[in-house]
Each structure stands twice: as C-alpha cells, then as structure tokens.
Length: 124
Image (cartoon, rainbow, N blue to C red; front, side, top):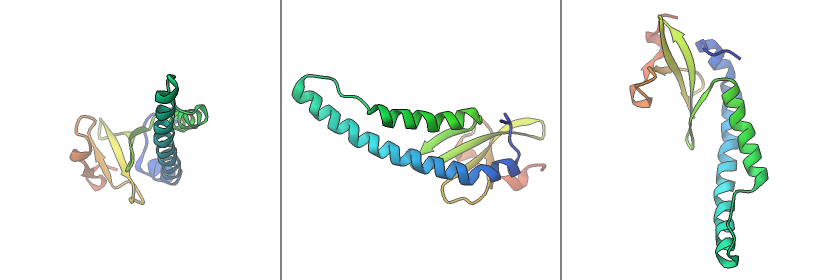
C-alpha cells in the first residue's frame, strides 16, 4: 500500500472508501443503541455493560483496512478521510468527504479541514 497517494490513486479508492465508511456509520449507530441497552440492563443487574463483540470486531476490521492503507479517518458521520500525499516537495493531505465524487481539495497537515485548498493549485 502506498504511504503517499497521487490524486489519481486517491480518486480510484473513493468508491471503496465511501462504501466502507457507510458501513462503519451503520455499525456506529448500531453500537450506540447496543451500548445504551447494555447499560440499562447492567444498571438493573449490577453488571457492567459493553459493546457487542461482533460489532466491535467488524468495526475494528473496517478501521484496520484504512490503517493498512495509511488513510486517516477524520469522521464517520459525516464521512471525512485524508489521503497522505507529497507534492511540490511538501507533505500534505488530499481531502475527501461525503458528496464529493473525486479529490478536489487538499490541506497541509496542520491546517485541517478549514484550511482546504483546491487541488488545481498543486503542481500535478
């Protein structure tokens, strides 16, 4: 897996990234409900409530997929992912969020989402 992505490589991964983040969002909602139910039961019987092992395992597997590819999950709801990149002699992050069909933005590592700039500014 590349440690740095080109815009083209990141664009090619967007459908898979979007699908995996959608599933992660579903699991996150299920986990929230499951935890709330487990805590209510635990208060009644004096035991500790926890996250269902199946949900936790699938969430861990999905997050591991992103980690193996050096992708930075910044948000699940709404989905937001940064792809590490190197352009013009500097490290930066190609930024993708829900509703975007391709990589159109980047930002410097310390700038965050608010510092997004159009990829057209990069020397591609």
